[in-house]
Length: 194
Image (cartoon, rainbow, N blue to C red; front, top):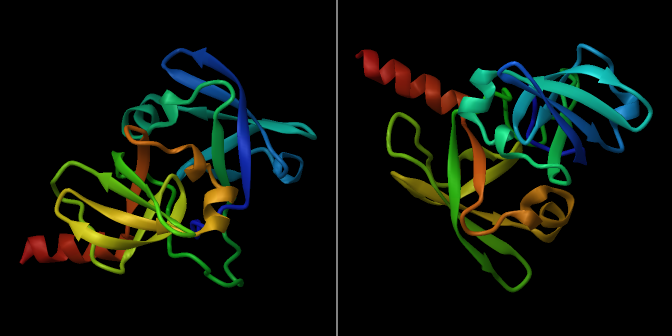
């Protein structure tokens, strides 16, 4: 369980193929504090640490993860948003994030405002939806929805978030991992059954 508040940015140092899986070596400021077998969010994808040293760690993404996220599109040198699991007796600064990506969306517009940025994200119409001022997790970042539509939404990014996440590298056409609000997903499923 995560909050969507990014702790660190990692850098992809190496990518190895292992059958249908990909093993990523990531260097970051928190790698030395990690433990093998620990869950860690990478761009919103919960992956297990399988190796670590003082400066880097390795995680393995299986075919299911590669099919449902943008993790397979990472290249050596790319930046990755990192968050360790939340501590249950602490503050929940973001929202409840599971680290289970629902689908991949695309940035269709990036607008620089006077002191902020607006990103318009498009996704396939279907069972997932947003609500105005509701929560959405984009590449692991907990954000508030503005301009909710059936096939997308916009998010407004403050300078701190822009500088301390990989949002600074997102441009029109970039693929982004989307995890929709868990409470909204349960409500939608309950209404389907009635």
